[in-house]
Length: 87
Image (tube, rainbow, N blue to C red; front, top):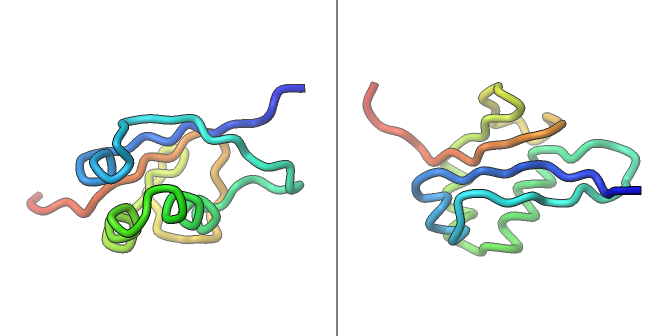
């Protein structure tokens, strides 16, 4: 059986903090989908303070919907977005 994975894409300052633009993260077999809060904790542990800073002020595009809700579940893909200025 293949482990479930989610696609994580990083943009601008998030890509700088991660040192890459995209990766696939395995989803632990916890019986529930990964949440934004769990992803946030995973990325902070993996990439440190610079990623934590990006995530505190940025947002996530979760399966096509912008979210800052830590309880939101991720089914397939999440984009880590830094704060944007302008309009």
